[in-house]
Length: 131
Image 1 (spheres, helix red, strand yellow):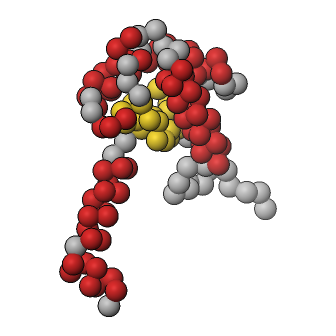
Image 2: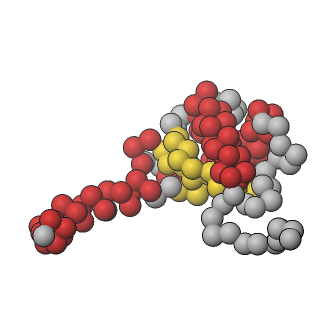
Image 3: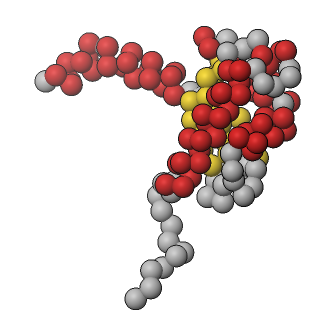
């Protein structure tokens, strides 16, 4: 019996995860070194928390946050403005069949972690967890 290749999975494939991590590292290195010729972008220190790729690996969504959390809207605008140069720099460092289109979103993971810590610090929640 042949395996059905048209199955749908609940999460990303190993290939998507691997390529996403390679793009994340490459993008973080490019931004840290200041390889992009935009002084407005280079004055920010940007953390690339995660990169998610589409199943066909043609679209990569990078979740970013500026150091200290200040200037989040400016960061997205600057990254979008330099999207093509970033795409060229990423594709130069990776050997993929297609150079993925880069999209940028704010990474709210750190905010959610702070909210969770705050919630667990509340007396009534701590009492329920311990009891």
